[in-house]
Length: 427
Image (cartoon, rainbow, N blue to C red; front, side, top):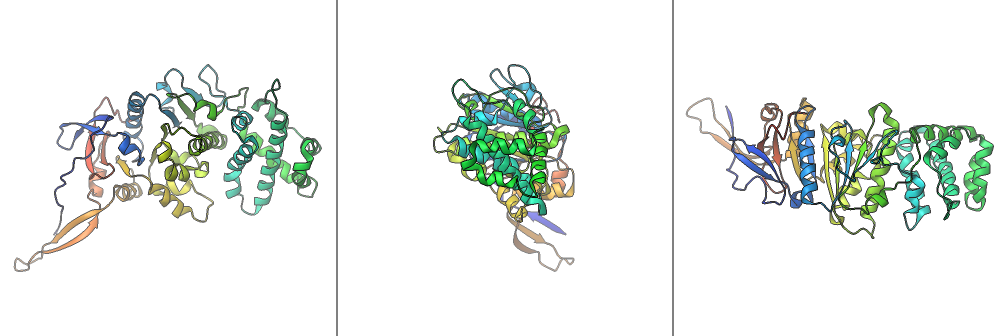
């Protein structure tokens, strides 16, 4: 027979905090779970299968954060439409075919113009937009990278033509031209800045020119899908404290959704990490975070953003999901581990598979435990050995019901909590 015996934990399960969530402990006693800035500074990871309460608890936590820190800004990735119905006055929604006063109609040129170095900003955005394509292009990488340079050249010409009284073209106008432009028309366009774009123009004069322009057309089709009129920018949005920007990821338009949501996240991260940022809190609520590739800068946000005011919550189901965000990179597994190591607090809900179980136990962490083995004979003395293991067993995780979770907050031991029915309806 094998018994695991641990020393009693004398610490409470959470620190005193200005922000708390109502729940019950393992004995059923009322509990206020402290999730204040001390916890948020270390970022929060939420694990567990679908239908076990993750989203509802995250939604309640988001509402409490907005009440406690009304000056903060919020960027919310909404994959399933669980958060947008709870938006508040002043919030914006980025989505396909967005309409209404709360629609966020992003414009890449206006985003560049909001920067003190607009042309460098434009080059960076073009690199981010094409990064996933470049990473997965394989032997066709040359054509994709050349298409990126052509697309940047087109945007640079458009940017330099903007001036007071002559606004930047809208995405709808750019899409209309790019989707039907010929090789000669693109060459003529780039020749407006031939001194700087001569090398890019030469790409469209070789044998590969048709293939390169085809890549530009394919990218424009994905990126500008649903494009309309608008001049919004993330830089301008973040100058208004207390608002939330909801990124409505549309699974029916997966490729376009990845491009749109990724570039907006990238711009928000760039603003937060810039030397001119005022260090005001910006919360990134990334439910179903694996829906997007990590090219938008998730690693930088987690590693460097805390001092600048970044507070991050990500929800994953297992290790495979995290690794898939880095598909195409030689260091895929190590990059995934680096991201996960940045989360100092974990909420583990009911897992749906053995892979989910191991992932949750690994993130809950290990502690020193005494394993006592009793022999088959009464004359054989017990054997005790010190080992390191997760104090939460696989059976305990699988026994969780909707709304129940094992919570390990920064510097505190794991503990089982039950979020009240009105706080967690199992969505």
